[in-house]
Image (cartoon, rainbow, N blue to C red; front, side, top):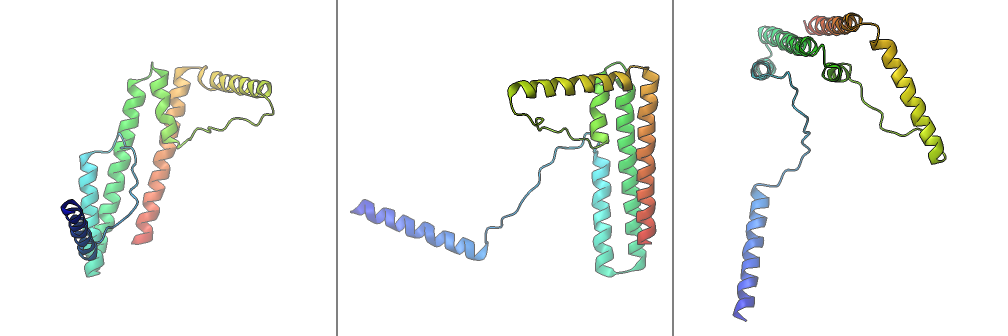
Length: 182
């Protein structure tokens, strides 16, 4: 009987503490998105983004034109820093791995935001699936040979043109953003 009383007293104590805790400090729930770290992200970028956020809060708090201008200049600076850091990172990968095709080609999918399709082709039986997969494999091989076989210089020219297009797109986005907010 003494044991039952102790257990019930302990349950009452725990329930009372939990109810008080929930009343004064309720549990907050939320969703946290976890993304893989960008290999080009640096401490400098982090510090500049913190500075940008401080300037944004200052601008919203005081609503002064000078704070708005400072905030948008910081936005432009952060975007330029990110762009330059990415360009240096990917240029170094391309330059260091000219002889290793796997390391050279792996960042291209990330740069162009290409996601692999993981669905099997439609099929009614295993033989048809096997034929479809073999056909796809041959087409991809032929495409690879067509694009990458001519010469390494052709391939590097193609990479540089992709880099130039990305640079141009980024510049246009920065220009539009700065003209929209000023």
